[in-house]
Length: 288
Image (cartoon, rainbow, N blue to C red):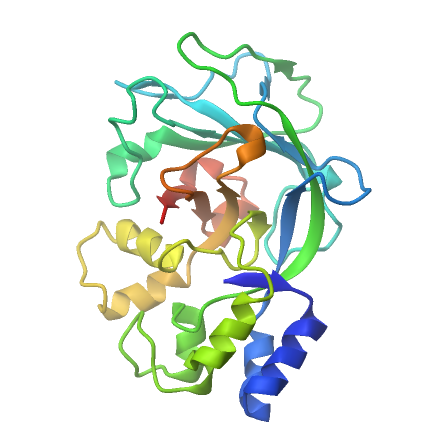
């Protein structure tokens, strides 16, 4: 939903919520890392666009029947703020994000959470330290995005109150994924939280900042083969099995526009992240 410091969030919650609810809500914040363009004096922790560095023998990711994916972003895991996340990102090497962005087919083929075959159109690769990767030229037909360097800043993140994990705390019997009768759903509190910083932005870990509804719902529904109703009890369990790996917003400086000012999201199960099974990450995207 948004991001800020714990102290600032606590002050806001104490202003708008009963004391017990305020502390419960603060306890549901999650740490994340914002990847910011041209902000701060720290070193570069990643970049949007440019050319990826891949080890010898690692092929450029391709969606069979459609073509090669565009290179979106890289993250230097060793350059991230130490102990700043509650997910087990690798401590070294580079994470590379690729996405079939429509350059080759004028946007005809879409990568969708509920279409398993299309998930090959979004990939995450981890290049471990010591593998001596080399810069790889973009395949014919694709134009690389302009390079935009990113700095990293630790932050706390808050989710919307109808996010399943938040709703489970305050109104476990309420209709799944909807507003409910509780002060955390009151408009003055929602407006105050949004006023912190409503930008989606680029981020690792923490609560995702969706453009529409919680992205975990889309991923959980897809993981259950899109079969259950949205209010199926299995959805509550499955939502809890996924965490945000990364989100990348539309970015003018990098000439990136995902639909109508949308964002790209990669989620993963914690056990797969610990095992560095990035091939099991799932992708979704949202736009306004």
